[in-house]
Image 1: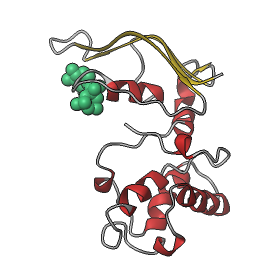
Image 2: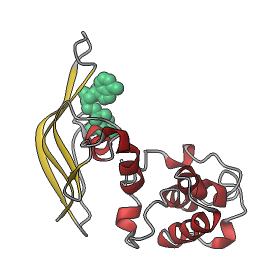
Image 3: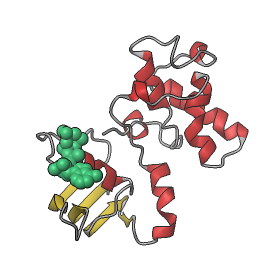
Image 4: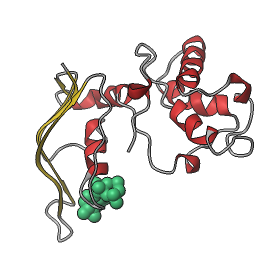
Length: 175
Ligand SMILES: Nc1ncnc2c1ncn2[C@@H]1O[C@H](COP(=O)(O)OP(=O)(O)OP(=O)(O)O)[C@@H](O)[C@H]1O
Ligand SMILES: [Mg+2]
């Protein structure tokens, strides 16, 4: 089984307007489970568009996006659940930390999933351990006290959505 797959996917920005732009044009890609896959391409070649298609932030203009063999747009009302399963880390993570403490920042995602305190706590600790972030940092401010290597780690910790899968490669998707 592939972790994710794009089948005949196209994406057009600003369709039916003078600014119409075909960013992704009929592509097929399979992302195998347990493999780290990199996408390389020049500026504007469509890498970020592909990443956003993979977790349902963008809906393909054509084709199918599959996660664990399921078409993620089969039930559009449930698309939010896909975002809990496929994490996305944006560029410049250090600009995206916003809570008062490291702990609260990591807890932001699980909290928005509506989980109870115990589950949130477990996910925070697991996410931190997956990226090698010490619990000593939990009460510190993510802005002031973290070192240059710790801040990006903290942000990756925010993606604490999949504790059932202790594989950091899945827990820390990126774009
Ligand atoms: N919101 C948007 N509206 C219109 N066109 C867009 C939009 N976002 C991206 N594009 C265009 O779609 C194409 C693909 O953009 P995308 O951001 O996916 O490329 P990228 O490979 O991630 O680039 P970079 O290496 O600069 O991050 C580019 O031509 C870009 O100008
Ligand atoms: Mg990009």
